[in-house]
Image 1 (cartoon, rainbow, N blue to C red):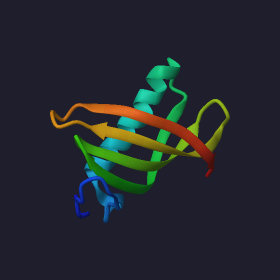
Image 2: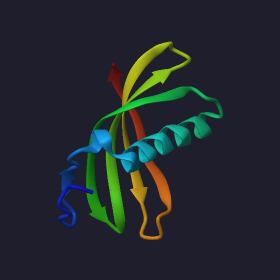
Image 3: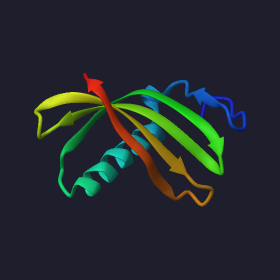
Length: 100
């Protein structure tokens, strides 16, 4: 990650637009949301913003643009993905914040 890693503080991730790791985390968040809905409701489009926080591992705060296949429109959502020290990922939060 290109950001400094101050323990506990949330820091922006520079260059997230070109980060394969951030895109993989974003796709993971959308996939987990779809699993909970038991349907392919959302399609990942792009990462709009990315921040990280040092916890037991890393907490990633990602703002995503997705396409809602049910409502037939682009939407913006905020997500939190926890990457634990053993590299296991867990979706902590997924909420819609508006239309794209």
